[in-house]
Image 1 (cartoon, rainbow, N blue to C red):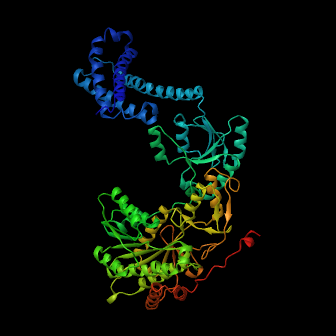
Image 2: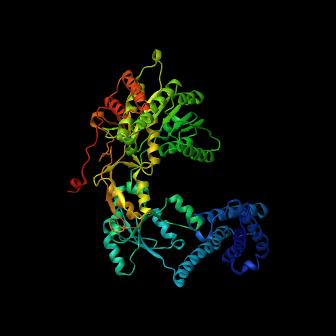
Image 3: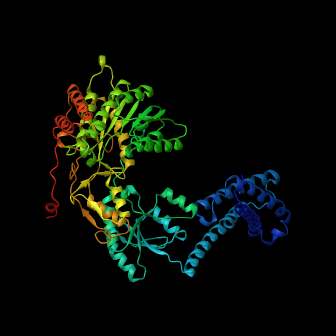
Length: 639
């Protein structure tokens, strides 16, 4: 019942005065001048009672949380509710005091209506005056308002138009992406056409002196495909428009309350425009909640996002393992700050150290293990095959063996699309690691006992990861270009790190509940591949430059181990869609555990001895489709 501020107190006094005036006006409307003669005693008694009751009701019902500047229908509803309660309470009190003998029976409904008008009217009048004053102030002061065109007719568009006085924008028209509302208007702003009419609408507005400078997309991420955003970006650039997007409705309303609304530039994630998978959050939570979880590579791009999402699922303990001191420190600091009640254990360890890995597993006894530690940069691993073998293959065996010895429920290995028909040492080493996890997954336990599940989740490139092309392009843009692309036909699958980890958890929950799928590989649905050269040019446009004019794109040729096109699934693996949305099941050949374990022992000896040639030979024996990619000359590609 506390009045929150001096300004709100003034509003409170206004409402009390208006309530007294409303009683006088209502009585006058009912009995005329008799209100000040025959009914003078009643007026003197009842008006203060009505004011006192209203004062208590208004504070109790929180009538002063709204801001007059943004008075709206919900605020009017609050006024109606408060007035209704006040009048009904007044009638009850007067009945108890006078049996209502002194008051005309029609006075309460008249009072109800007059009080609503006197309380609600000034609120809306203030808003209208303020809106017009702000608009007039902008016109008189010469402050330019940027003319914009909205794409999409919906709640977000209506809210943006309604809040124009709080922005530097002036909406001159709208486009309906569904072609259903042409000729109609929203708050006086006309719907001028559909998406296909963009050029004609811009030209028509230009002839009226209202040429828009910006095209603002009002639809959410899940409502617009990446292909549509890419096409809009191309068309907007051709028309000299900047393409932007409104924030989400929740963020928009928060910004509205703060009086500061900003549209956002289109981001790389918008260009992907991947449809949102339906997550089985119940199964994911059941997999993690109240369990001790260990994450290797916890400081990396995937590992750190795994840590964030797992921490939010309320495990009993979270063990962070990484060989990189700074990255481990950074994610540890973040998680302890965001989840102060979570038991976090930070372990500086290298997965290549078998004894160290076994000791930490015996000490912490995790139930779930997510193995994200790996060397993933293709050219570097190509130059250092022994290091790639030690981390990606031997490190995986160490973690898997430790998980089995500690009796973990499941281990999830993060793999890559480069493991399919690999042309790089990195891809082949990850496929070798997959083979070992598959062999362990189908290896029977002693006396038929249930053994640890070993699941492999395979997916493609993650936007913004340390090995991704996007940070490279961003650095090159900051330096003024050029942007370097290895080949004009290079294509890659991309997804955001948040989505990748969500689907990793979804795939893990699916696999953990299905023992009949042992020995299989879980593959995330990566959508459609993206041409790297197109991505480069779109990033140049997003930065406000013209591709091949302001910023050049140069082709440097394929690097060792690179493919022109990565595969997520191959026909030989007999892929099938699972019940989990966004997850496929692949069935690559399973190698006998004794064979793969013996080969892995030989691989470790060769790698620790620095024998790169022997390492490659052993890898090729276990991964027979490992082959060097035939480098396509740039001249042939351009021909």
